[in-house]
Image 1 (cartoon, protein in one colour):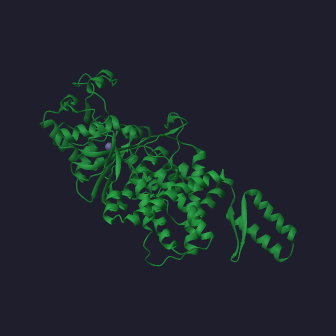
Image 2: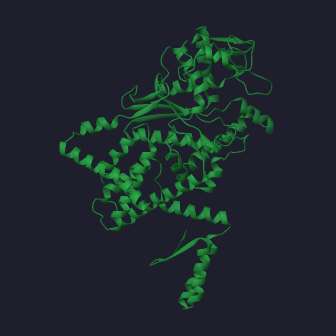
Length: 506
Ligand SMILES: [Zn+2]
């Protein structure tokens, strides 16, 4: 087993060493190297293939990600999407792009209104509560803040202006205070999801609304009902439909066309299809150039949902594992691969993260970094190569662990020459993946979580260690050994260091 593992880990490394040597020998120019690595390829749902990212404005990427509807706590399925696009954001910055990243809040919607009714409060209060929760989760997941986080309710004038434009072109039509988008007026409807209009119409299982010209027509504006939040509009008091907010807010902040529109796979139809129809019909310009969608998270082969009761909130998961472990768990699968949530996978990820943090801690202890160390270019190049292939985080992580093994080997052998540069590069690539943090905080959190789960306290353990030390000073060896065994049975390992006795979890 060990032999196989080491052969596997050595293989790619040797190949790469060979390749780097070849590069040096043949004297590939810097320019060629850069051209090769700057070519980020991403899978575009719109074309159904991997394409090279060519931004509208050179050197700049404008990206919109559909955010959450704030009527409930976020679950781990949301975390997969959030972490996917967090790494995309970090990686685009790593490549040197100036990135404008917009992620919205849907803060008016049927579900929010329904929740408010159930709880005898206002939609505004529900939205406010879950936006605050979202920020707490985002912080716990260590997400990099977007450039802008617009809310639908703060963009009503822009939404109305967009609907009026569609109405003036005869693409939108009002009925009794509602306004619908006429799908028949947008011939390329279905181009993102790859569905044909006639098939969609035949299969439309939507609730039949006699007032609509086609069953596929969707609401841009909804007439106010008793007790619901509403705004004045040319069609009377009402509120926006869901899709129109993303068309209005993305183009307000990013222009049209912009580069990347992203979200979960479940949003392709109808949400993203409808966004394209609205924005392109209104402006006669392309909407977004690249569409990135993450595959959904399942639990026991089923979609995670409240009604099935297979639902973990982000907060519940983070009480059981470190945010970095959850991140590692998701990144170990490609974002376009289906993933079935598993406790075992999460535990393996936690062990992996521990190795990264242990290595980082060893490096900072044994190889004090001078103020300015140039990162090792070979490691960065290898990382770019993996990540520029449609954000291949599983392969990027494999590279990280190859480096963990190599760094530890060099540290074991006391070969610290050149380790500064490799350590710097290691810091950078783990940082892009969001797996870089304070090792001490990581291990302390791990201890705290472990203690909490067992109803133990660190004070009690410290007291046992003190008793053992006293027993040792008094040469009561049997008692000292007994205390050690007791702690060991609890899963605690003691280490006697020159600075005193420290404990860690087995
Ligand atoms: Zn959206």
